[in-house]
Image (cartoon, rainbow, N blue to C red):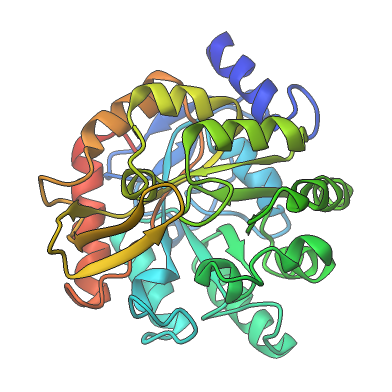
Amino acid sequence: MKTGTLRRRSRANGGQGKYAPSRCLMAKAPCSGASRIVSPPRCWPVPATSCRADPKYSCVRPQGVTASTFNMQRLMTMELSLSVRVAESVLNKEEANRSMEHLADLAREIGYSAMCMRASQAGIKSPLEQITAVRKVLDDRGLPVSMITGDIPIPANDEHAPDALRNITPYLDLAELLDADLIRIGMKTEEDIAWARWASDEADERDIRLAHQSHTRSLFETVEESVSVLKQVGRENFGIIYEPANLDLCGQDYGPETIKRFEPWLFNVYLQNHRLNPKGSMTLNTWVRGPAPHDPVPLQETGGIDFPIIMRTLEEIGYEGYVTVHQAFAELMEPEDAARQSYEYLTSIADF
C-alpha cells in the first residue's frame, strides 16, 4: 500500500486507529469487478459457489466477520455498490418497486460488491422482523451494506432531514442490525453543525461513521461550504459522500480539484447522471443558483457528468472505498437494465 494512501486514510479514517485498514494486498481476479484478498492470514477459504472469480478465496464476507472489519480489510481498491434507489421512483422515495430478494440476486449476479440501503427497504421505522429479514437476504448472498439512509426525510431533503442528528441512536441501532459502518445524515443550518459533532461522538463509541452527501438545499451545496462544515464538525468519523451531479446542479466544479479538496473526508461516492437543459424535464431548486432544470440520463450517456475523469482522479488519489450507483432510473429504464448497464459502463472506465 502506498504511503500516500496511508496518509489519506489517516486523515479520513483515523490514521492507524480503529478506522484504519489492515495492511493487506489486493489482486484482481479473472472476472470483472471481483477481487480477492491474497495476503495471509486474511485469506478465507470458501466453497466454490461463494466466489465467481476464484474458488479458493472469498469475494464475500464470511460469517462471524463484521462489516467494518471486512470492509477495511478488503477495500484496498474501489468497489461497486448498488443502491436500492434504482428501484424507487424518481420523486417517491418511500416505496420500492422491487423486493430486496430480487435486488440482492440482481446485484450478486451482475457482480456488485455491496448494496446501499435506504428506508424504502429497511429503515428506523421498519419492524425488527423486516430488518432482520433484509440482513439475512444480504448475508445469504455475501453482500455487505456499504451505507444506510435510515429514514425518508434525509433523502427527501426536507425540513426534518437534520432530525437524525438530534437522536442518532436509532440509526446506529439500524446500522448494527444491518452490519453497516456508515450512515448518511442531513444538515440544513449552522445549528446542525454542533449536533453533527454530538452525533459523531456517539457514533464513534460504536465504531460507526457519519457522512453528508453533496446535495442541493443543504450545507453541502458548494465546495467551499462543504469543506468549511467538514472542518467545523472536526470529527474523524464524519465525512462526505461525493456526488458530482448535485454539485453540477449547484454550478460547482465537480472535477479533479474538487475531489482532491474532499479527499481527506471522502467516505463514499454516489453516481447519477443528467444533462443541464433550460427546458429540461426535471427542475430541482438550489439555494446557490435557484432552479436547475435538467434531463436525467443513464450513466453511460455522454454530454452529462464526466465520469472518466472522475474515475481517473479517484484512482490517482488512491481512493479505497465504495462507488455507488445511486440514480433512480424509473423514467428511463427498468431497474434490471439500469443496474447491468451502469455496471458494464463503470467497469469499462475504471479498475474495480
